[in-house]
Image (tube, rainbow, N blue to C red):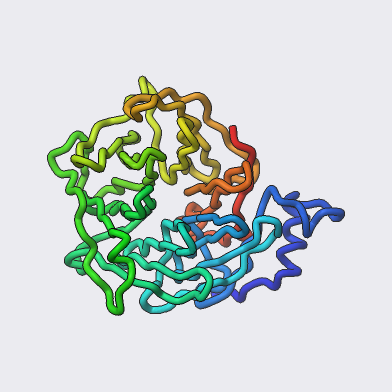
Length: 320
């Protein structure tokens, strides 16, 4: 395993890659660097990102380390080191001083107090020995957390009153999508990104393998497709800003940020643009902060090919 490069080397690499000029190498904000640490060293391969008023958080799929950086800074450094329990960190969300972490193939979800870094509670899927990939999560207006599982036809829920516990609790199955209009394919990578609507009535779901978006009504658990005429969207992470839905598509080493205009009931929409950026490298998920979108560059393609990755970054891009 390679040793982690020192931060000074990261700054030098940023200059070589064109991420910063000599005059603004420590201040340019269009790309953040991840300063690697922990058991995974520089094999971070990040996936999820979340933001609060001052910071952004990025998780490692290799060892579960959570990195944190200042939005006004340049570098994300270790905030919570990974361990045997949280050995993967995929989807992340921040809400009301808490950090929610989806644990991927571990089948676990973790809740942390950001101020103290203390573990508030943890949860695990039913029958955790079966294939699972707890992928992404969102916090609805009432504080309930909804979680996708890419390998199971399942959407989980954690109620606010259940956040705190002293030992792992079994995740509550909120909706089994079997038999619904949402097609589940065993063995494929199914449900992925999820985002709650501002009205507190729905969550929107990205179905990666079907290249579609779905709406789940929370009141009666009804699922319907968000109709996007003649335009498949292979969404990963989702960001909803009013009636603008942004889906990150990982298409090889490049990838796109897809802008979708949705109607007031979130049942139909129109793809307005597909935008790529020079700094994208296998983008996966996004989060909104200070008028920009932060997009994680996973470099999963380099991992699959056994190639040496570049320094890991998070792009900070203008909203299309």
